Image 1 (spheres, one colour):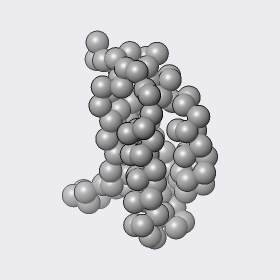
Image 2: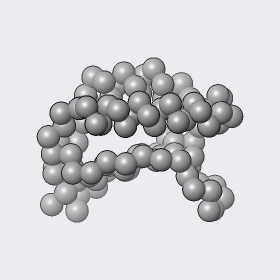
Image 3: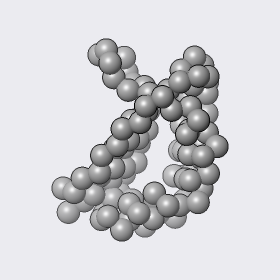
Length: 102
């Protein structure tokens, strides 16, 4: 059985005003995923909202893992934490997340 993590962000400040800021965040996350050794990571993607409906979040990350332990390694990875601390946390107006098995 797989374990899925979904997180959405609504941006504030420069991330809300400048698409290049969000592109930089996405690029940092993608580079980390490409270079990281994350056993049990089955799939990972991120991207901006397509703008097809109102009241959506601005950005999402979806990751699928073999199990909850693989998710915990991803969640706690030092480079992941650095990207969150330096590029994401101060730009988040709202964050939602869900993790589920199945």
